[in-house]
Length: 120
Figure: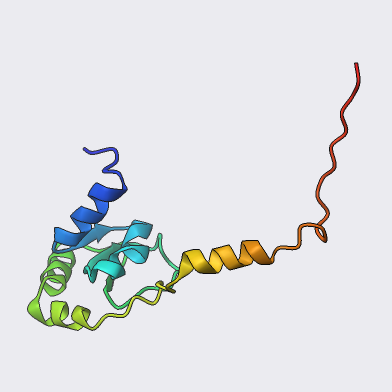
């Protein structure tokens, strides 16, 4: 068992594997950028928007259902659909947007906490 790949190894791994299986938020958030098929097990990610690379499987699945979903996920037909996938989580230009928000902050207007030195 690997405790953590670290970001670089993890993303490199996502780039070369055929399919992800589990209930991790990574399947919902990072995998679309790699056009990676994901079989989402159970309802842990319920309520989150899911891109078209996600194949949901209910919590009470059996081995036969899982095998069927795996075959579909790695099929040429599904892989072909994913080539056109647009990652709806990707907004682009994020660092510039964050920088603009920081620059636009009016710190004088905000009620910043005041500190008082106590003389001993």
